[in-house]
Length: 279
Image (cartoon, rainbow, N blue to C red; front, side):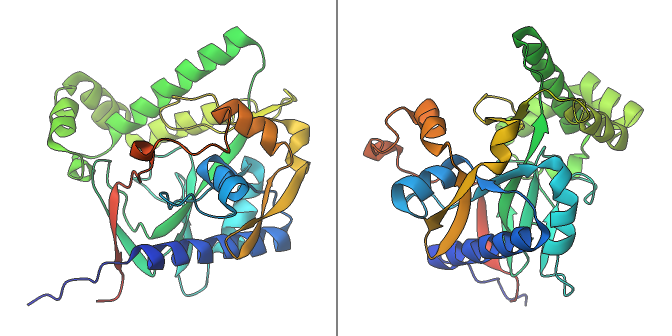
């Protein structure tokens, strides 16, 4: 009889996230890697000096060219700490990386499966982007197409964690699946997406941006010279880097960002259940 894994409590999960964040900060300081908090992590640091009470994920951003040095230093010899990104995991499909702790294992639901997924901090890459409005609009469209091509090239076996409606919808896209999965292939589609994400790497556009997978927002733009303009701020018991221009960023994103949202909006959007790795 197989023993069931023990579920992780909310506090244990948050403690694990803080452990990863502490390791990230130390590694980045040692390696000279420029990272900053973003998303709800930035808002949490400014408004709550830690986690937003009803949220428990952590997002950071760093220049793409700094990531290889970070990933190598973050990994531990015993394999407990590791990174997941499109280059080191065959079926990993996101535009960003994840810094993971393997002492927990996450069982996904509602999104495509990701193998070997421990508790993680999202690491978004800051890439150079164009400035001219029409070029930005076309670039976003090209990126979205490239991301969708990767999605349709993924093997059927990692679709089992999607809900029934989304699985059926995916199966109806037969021509796109045949083209991407069988005729072109996942490896080539991932490389095409990577080439597009780094299209402007050797240019001096003056603009950096993170690329969310579905490109629904234009939020995380930052001036090139702002990468070195960051300050330390409390996050729970840690000190982490945030953009010095955090007030401008958060006002742009949330307007009166110090005002709490309505109670019915204070909820987590987890798409996984966390268990301890050891039975």
